[in-house]
Amino acid sequence: MTKSSNTPSSKKNESLKTTRRNFLKSAAALPVMAVAPGLLHAASSEHVVVIGGGFGGATVAKYIRLWSNNSIQVTLVDPKALHTSCIMSNLVVNNRLRLDQLKITYDSLRDTHGVTVLRDKAIDIDPAAHTVRLKAGGNLHYDKLILAPGIGFKPLEGWDKKVMPHAWIAGNQTTLLKRQVSRLAQDSTFIMTIPRSPYRCPPGPYERACLIADHFVRKGISETDEARVVILDANEDIQAERETFSKAFDGIYRNIIDYVPNTEVFAADASTMALDTSFGEYRADAINIIPNQRAAWLLRKTGLTDGGDWAPVDPVTYESSVYPDIHIIGDSQATKQPKSGHMANSQAKVCADAIVRLMKGHAVDSKERLDNLTTNSACFSPITYDEASWLSANFAYDKSSGRMKLEHIGEAHEWSKGNYKEMFAWASNLFNDSFI
Image 1 (cartoon, one colour):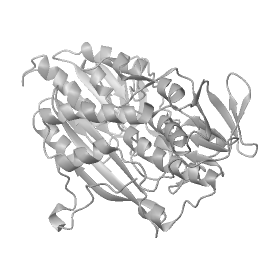
Image 2 (cartoon, rainbow, N blue to C red):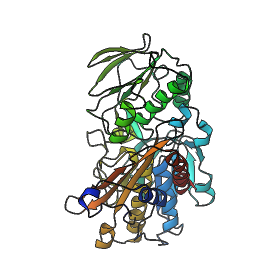
Image 3 (cartoon, rainbow, N blue to C red):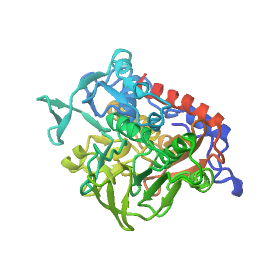
Image 4 (cartoon, rainbow, N blue to C red):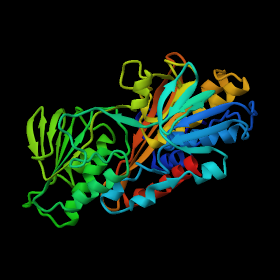
């Protein structure tokens, strides 16, 4: 992946700033590795199995086929026939998009790129035998296994997601939250909880709070109305786009949003619509619980998290630090890079590049490759019905620590209709690059 055009400026005052022009150039380009192996041939018997058909899994399957000149066999395993994007899913909640507009098929992966798409669920891994056990029965043998299964949730006492939806995995939960939001009135209280960082984003929690507040505004509430959006954040402060969301919470939504940081949620009671927290009991007409998160259950079951919440990997190849020939990308990995669809796409290309090289017998730790080992994450955040902000973060491999180091981060200085329009172009480009 080529280094992004919006690396830090040499001017001290510009070191953490990104212009909209440079952001859009970086976000839209979705660059691939500058030293990608491109059309290398591996032994035709070699087989890569990919678990998870989201942005990470789809991208890595596609690019392994492309960069090996279709010589590496790739099987993508996912229990669903379609992927429903978490990216942009908050716009379903406020009726700006339909859920079916976020559904993406695997047709192009199968028909254009020759990926074998298997609708099934992986229920166990045998690292010694190099096999994956499937729910429908039987085992898949792999030479390389790539895990991109997304996130898992930590349990919360009393939580009933059918009453207090999370809507953090797009689908039925998104639709349920949408219905609840549509019933909110001028005297309603809506509570959303934000988990301890790190967590998957998007969908972004702070943007969701803004869109719920905007829902009240468009219903014509006034300063004398009692409608409230209460944000119970387990973190000490806003975790992303702090300037933007502070301005929104303290400005256009100051009479609607109550932001409460450092709030732990201990238990939920769906029958009384109440939460037991570190600041006492909260009750509401609708509650959106976004639970604390960790690696997906399959990784925990297999021991790939090494006793922690997330799976340690080598960012040069994304190979597991626990078992060889297993690579982990996307939300479940422990590199401290953002857990976003855009980042999963970026990591997938690094991983695909490494696997094709390894199967060809080429080095993955050459100076040229390590000097160009970068990833990036970008997202847009709708703030009102037709205005948005954006955030961009770039990472580069640090040879001294063996880690991905944050090289640059920037956010828009204002939300605008222009950003809202660009948001759809960015999403379309990302969807196409990952799945088409």
